[in-house]
Length: 393
Picture (cartoon, rainbow, N blue to C red):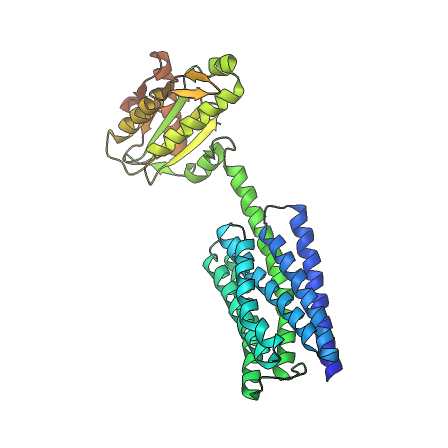
């Protein structure tokens, strides 16, 4: 039975080591998911703990048990910290250190004074709490990737339950000092569950990483890298197939004489001007609206669920807020203005592209009228076919 138990321990160690290498390779190929590196560190500690514990099963002794206890509790603490890191994005090491210290303080003195039975009960109980707590962290973040995260929650909780069973068997045995490794049905079941759970958790962690990478690529494809606003593609994906009624307006803005700003102050200064204007747009955005950078110095705002005249007031508020900015970058001072064009849908609905084109036409009217102003597309224009010129692509 001892040989079988040690064989199970060996299989668990090999499984954990293979998972560690796989996760490290995944993290190393693209290092945006740093929680994978935390998992690698935790698995390294657990593998080392399993190796040391195997010496305890071979020849007993408190020293190997104490070292194995320290390594494995530190590893499980890091696993819990990795789940918190996944959910919150913060650094895991302070939490991992604090959890490790608590676990060592609770169990290590018992092992060192010869109460290894109580020490093993504490180890199993604390591991169960850490694993179930890890599952709870992933459950709290389940909206990000429901499939992989739900699977991880189940596997972590089942693994935690298997450690609780081991503690229960030791409690039922009633011995505070063992002098030898506990070998029973609960221990064998625990190792089997951990081998299967580790394989499943590893696969789901990789799936979660791929899910995050795909979401990141989608976000990058839909976001303007300079301003952080959605781009033209995202705006058309959201509104392109819709018909806008009389409570929805489109406002198109263009920063006045932007080319001369770039020529005079440089493109880095121009980029800062674009960022500042994006901030002004976001400050005026209504809850049901959207703001996008169409390209260059041209921006669009979709204003939903507004009363007549509200869109014009919003556009003028943006214009005046931006004109009042005293822009100072690298000691260079500048004031900029912006022109805007507003178009509103019609009661029976009008394609988004048509309303956008009409707002674009009103913008050019504002430019022709002297800039630093907002023009509204007339009712006659709003019921006419969309102009072919200045069509947004």
